Image 1 (spheres, rainbow, N blue to C red):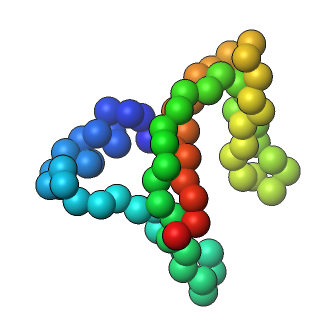
Image 2: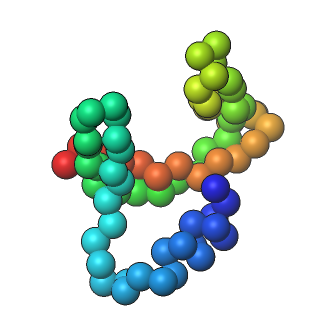
Amino acid sequence: MTIKELRDKLAKFDQSKEAYVHWEGGSEHQFFGIEDVAESRGTPIRHPDNKVGFAFDATGPVEWVFIIISPE
């Protein structure tokens, strides 16, 4: 998702509302609080199980924005 796509989705909500991350891991639901947002340089990678990863490296070819979360 791009920053523009995320902004467009969030724009429809009242700005005073709290935002959380909800993850459904099988039968378990987990909630995370959003702590910060940061930009990092590195290299996107694809693991053998087809999951996306990111190798942080100051000389990497791409910059991604990461939303830093913590368990609630």
